[in-house]
Image 1 (cartoon, rainbow over the protein chains, first blue to last red):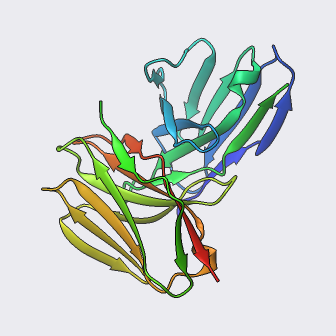
Image 2: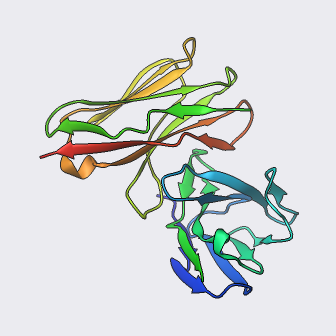
Length: 115
Length: 111
């Protein structure tokens, strides 16, 4: 089946630094990928929709200058958390839609801890 | 504002019993309905999806959809301790692949 790979799975960084998370669709092309954030005991909240070759669409309340999304190819989308702060510590999950079935496949998630 | 509501639980059932998980949604135009299982610290994994009213069975899992009442449920037969996880209900709107998630129901299967 379709697989979405996310890297890194865990990252710890200092406040003020930037962190990049990669999301790859391994055996299918994904023109659209989605980035979610999940705080402890909360549901997944959609941050943005990443579109290959065009600008990402951000959800209300998500700062596009802070969460930079690049979808340069049909198999790779990246999320860069710029000038990270402790409140950005969360579980970030990407997903991509399978072309044949339309179902959403999730990456393994990336746990970010900002000290 | 589209909303998906789930009882947060925890729902505790003995091993071998039927676990019943429920979800209601506010957008009457919703068209696709998904159940995901999420183990602690892990990413969600798809269990089932359903588009039409009625029941859909897959192994020990049965999804039930009632669009008139705007609810979708997931039944897990012969519950196993390995089924212990948080179950997320997710819904897409008309013409959209964007998922709206509920907060999830934590299921605990007691051996």
